[in-house]
Length: 232
Image 1 (tube, one colour):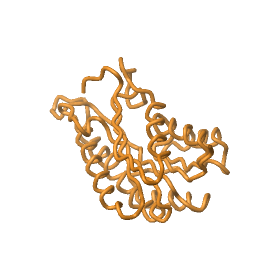
Image 2: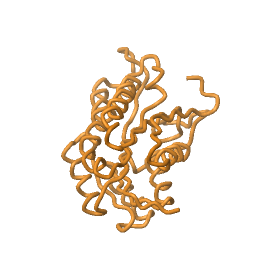
Image 3: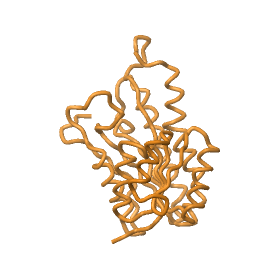
Image 4: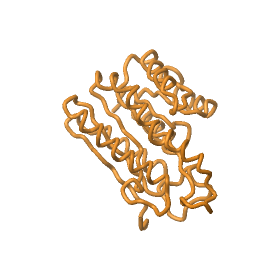
């Protein structure tokens, strides 16, 4: 069955975002693909059917004006906005100590991308999604439920756990659904080397599509997925 609702994805140029875009296109959704990597993004939009089915919008999620323009582009292209997947984010080394290889200046960028970015996405899209009685999904993490020693990234994902629940409570009387997607170890560009055990981006895409395919009276609030054998 085809579903032509308008589906916006940030961080869409690779990994979980790109896999979800392909799954959503297969289900018949019209797609708004957003990321900073304009060339890869446009190639994906072309792969998924071009401007009648998928548009690419270059967007830095740390820039609120850019996110407003992204939502405006979605409305201009397709007339509405039904589903938003706030997925953009990145990680870093697992040490808060002075011996860490991670530059503390990257922590500022991590907060801006991983926490402020999804909050900006929510703010920019909320009126349109509310009008559509739509669905907002946010990428959290298993480490937003169980902290990793010394991980600043984990702290940003704990913030996302709180953000998703705050939004869910805000939207309870509107018909808008809110889902937090919490991946365990996933084989994406997040890692420099392939993890020994890992989910695939397609596994998370199926979880997203499960949540959005439920009938309107079912709100899948959280989906936490781990690869079999992950201890954390």
